[in-house]
Amino acid sequence: MAVAFYNHALIYQRRKADIDGAIMRVLSSGRPDWGPEVPAFEAEFGASLGAAHVVTVNSGTAALKIALLALGIGRGDEVITVPNTDIGTVSAIHHTGATSVFVDVDPETLTINVEQVRAAISPRTRAILPVDLYGQPAKLVELMDLARAKGLHVVEDACLALGARIGERMIGTLSDVTCFSFAPTKHLGSLGSGGACVTSNAELAGRMRKLSAYGQDRARHVLIGGSPPPLHHETEGLNERMDEIQAAILRVKLSDVAESVATRIRQADIYQKHLSAKVEVPLAASGTLHAFRNYVVHMDNRDAVRAGMTARGLATALSYAPPLHLQPVYDFKGHREGAFPVSERSGQRLLGLPIGPHLSDAQILEVADGLLASIEDASVA
Ligand SMILES: Cc1ncc(COP(=O)(O)O)c(C=O)c1O
Image (cartoon, rainbow, N blue to C red; front, side):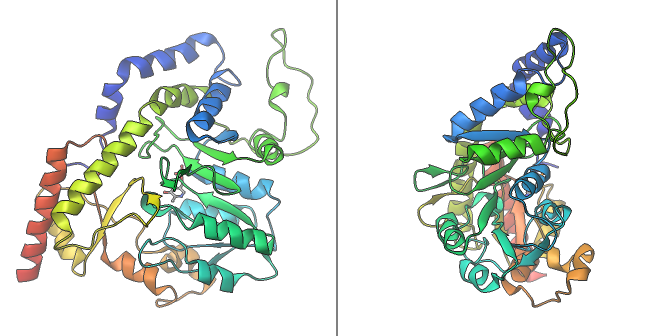
């Protein structure tokens, strides 16, 4: 590919010395587990967001599941969410035993439609799970107001939205629990897998921490005088913790996040300037800062245009299409085509373009020119 969607090797090379040093520090510490890196990363990540409590876990999917479980959500409960998302969002709900209830999204932002949420609330509803799709914050202020009025929780899927804001408030400070992913392709990418639950509620943070760690306090795993303290189990949990090596790597990469988000915003601006006369481009909703984890345009003859891009060596992606209610795994929910028209229309027309700090502005322009040429070719074909 002349322009690749991701380039993990390049991103690693830029911080190679620091990343190698961080990995070696863990390897030579003799503390591959329950060491100092995880708590240090949690403190540093929380400080970067202005958030009180961070509980790291081993994926974004785990973050969502643990947040829901810690809120006591399970069998018989309903969680309202969207179909135009990663399967991790919905499988996290199902792994608690709860039922997912889909509602459609707003056409302008492709995030959850608040009025449809209101209409979908039933006596079994326990939580709303909005997704900050592609880095665009969902309407979190309105959703939190609705949730407070109805006695519900908001568990936010911000796996794509690190660095986004509503007004001056960072994503990570607006909902009951904000869940992040540190998959390698995200704004803050580990070299494996990782995630975090962020909350201002100390008691909830304690429950999430225990749940992710066998149901036990961290103190029970830290060697005292070289030996473990005696086992003492009062609750069950999972083993879904972040590991020391990923935490050490993330501590290095955390210092690049602000610049990486700024790069994406600048690249989105270049795309917008070159494409908006001919293409439906994404725009940040008023009063929000879009973190542009994905740059997704929409067009009618998407498949032909995509073929033109591939022929030109320009990578593209179908970012979360088709929507989940039309995927075989969710046949059992009984939704047919037409159930969520905004998500479906987006799924048929969307095309993700490469964006991110692995790309130069010249490459962004090459993609933009290639897109315009591919649209031209598709319209005469
Ligand atoms: C919107 C969304 N939610 C959840 C996830 C799951 O995150 P992870 O892959 O870290 O489990 C992702 C990851 O791609 C995502 O994009």
